Length: 602
Image (tube, rainbow, N blue to C red; front, side):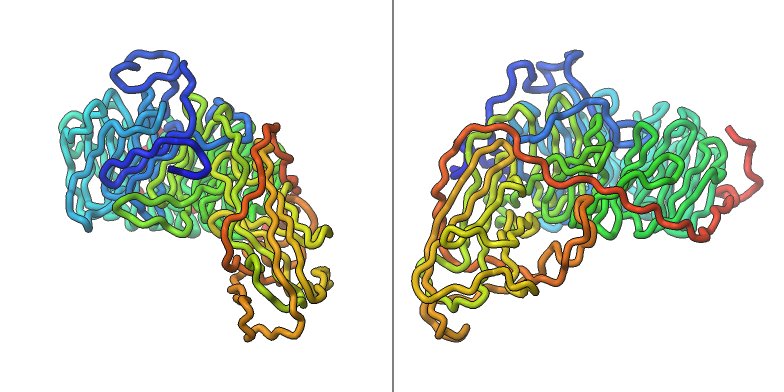
């Protein structure tokens, strides 16, 4: 039983589901009950639409709370996202494809093409079309699956693995492969209708600019446009470097694509360059677009809003790297990062509205991980946000999910009842809240009734550490006199549930770190927020501090759940200066795939 929530745990093979809250009565429970139900939303392909813009008009009000969590098999660096139709979610993770109910996260079926313990994983978002699921795997196979029962209809064997997210158009399913080939298969038979070979791997998703043009990105630094029905090459263009990490998206007859630090706007008709710019840091995520703005993450841990004319509108340092595609839901940008953190930012200003740390899960067949990363783009469907993390967990969040439990504390430093030296005593504790997440602005720590600055909430270490910098150059951590001392730590979640814990330790200033009166020197780890520069739109923060991981000690949670409203939002979205443009290599047209003169534009 989870100590934090009164939920029900159900184990099934390597699958674990925890249901935290009753589902709203308006939602349906399975595919058979919901066939033809017009009230249910669907997300049938990667990034919400054939243009791959990652935008939905549906909205969610933050803060959100965890509704349920379904755990399958862990799979590092899983970029595949869930899709949904008729109240059922479908996702690929590890060596299997799963169907689970939106209502409670219970499993409907599981498709595992191999029972081998070393079976190759799926790293691909399925596409739904006319009652069937299409998905490729690292086992070199591309599958058609019946969504009613999870049974294989046909399989196509490729020479290499398939990580390109498929799209269905005109009776064909289109995708790329690691062998550098763009494939179009007949959806009825699985036979090749046409194929085209590039000089690099094609792991990025194909994108449609119209029913008559599909664009593929290849690691040979090129984009290729084809007629999706015939395979006829419409145009191709060479970029300065590999565009597959931030592949093309399309809106309003314009293609936006990033390749490392280079950002391009191309015409949808011919691939000619309209404008280009060079950013200050390489782009690390797929692009998201709506309302004349493009959103993406960069290598320096910033989330950037760029106008559709190449001007930076805002830049927010979230402090953690990300490779996952952001989801834009109305005016809220949802951004998953490494160490399992999900951020909600205002698309208008970049202000952080909410964040949450997904706690790593385990099953009866896999141990619980210390932390989990998120490389998958979330989806929003029927009032819930769904996030797939690398520990194999699909987490469901809702604005109307109840949360009355406060955060939990553990692993205190100094450890309770121990004796330590009194010079620059490090204070830390683990704070975890699996309901709505810890509100960073609520965390405070005092010693003997006086608050100790600076206190830092750092969600990157599987929860959060409250750290006072032991090498603070201003020496603001007080030196303590001999005798007993008391620490009070307070934190609230985003719903306003507050917890306070108290513990005591003793100071003996004659002690050296090697002395052993119950003192365990804390292990030092790099501070994740060290030298970040402009943080959440504010002034530059001093760096150089080394954080202390928590020492020993038990759980001494003295808080009581109290109802409350949403927490205080954290920080603002500052406006970064627009970098001065530098000379950028201009994309050059490629000869058409397969040789011969280029055909006239479609």
